[in-house]
Length: 455
Image 1 (cartoon, rainbow, N blue to C red):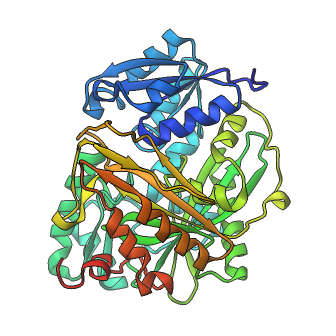
Image 2 (image 1 turned 30 degrees about the vertical axis):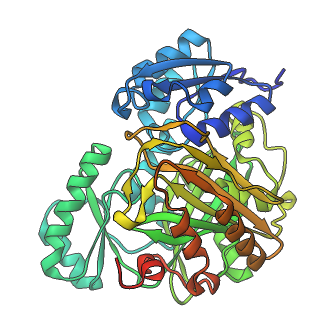
């Protein structure tokens, strides 16, 4: 049995991240409770968990976002903790507070820290006050177009419009001139309200040719904090990450160390605990700016686990149980290079339209130093209600070149039939000269790299 205070955890999520959490819980001797929507009744997390409860029909608003049903399942099952995974309620401070009010430990930061991070404008203010360089932007959500025009006049175009809440590229637009500004703001506000229930947006200076680099941190409830190195997430489509790798191929050691120190400094200023990620934008001259902080486990956490040997999800449970971290900063040793490709049920040839359906044939890649995080199995049904991410392929090598070759081999082996996926798209992207030379930036046209002039 587990020596931790957490004895039974509700996994308030689905798919590969639910499976990942259940596995970590089992290895710690913690009982797991899977929650599932009606279409997910036959999913692998349900089969793997010690108990399982249906929390509603397919649409997320009726199931994985249904706080009342999730809390009821936790109370009925006698669980003492809830792990939210990523997405859905993972960064909802009110959900964390409701868990606490029912005597249930939320495996993540507390309400206060999550609220500070959830307001991107407030997070930037806190980071600036503690000495971090932040991307120039409006101090709060914009209230009228005069404020937006003044900002654009000061910093010039293009201008980035961002939702004050949420992530995943939702509520983001780039305005390239004054004529586009008002229209882009309206689109971003509408998408933000539809995605997060909050229409507020703010403006930031836009950096062309920048790299997106994030630092993984762990902070226990005694205040011990470590950073596990950085991940480069610059390969994106429509502000959504496609490929992540660790370490970043563009940072020198001085910048790497400075960024790690800045991440821990920012986490301390926020009053953060548990696993989190501090994200930075690196300009063409190597100067980095605080971008935002994510109060959850990241989709791309496996690349950090492969280069450090540290199980981040287990660390989350240890921290949430009130225990100190079992390792110090000097114990963190980054070895080799790891790359992750996100595999999605979508058709790149048709504008990346989602492709739900039944997986009629499945061959997973394998071999040394290849990891596949997925809840797929032959015959499983992929419902239309959720994010299209269905698998993550992660390859490790002694060098970046070796990791790229291993990833290419793994993607060649990966076979999914019955639905369309982006496997071949990722294979071509990995094989591109721009990727091999680490030239892809946040604003690179990855479609042109793969399709040429056909997109």
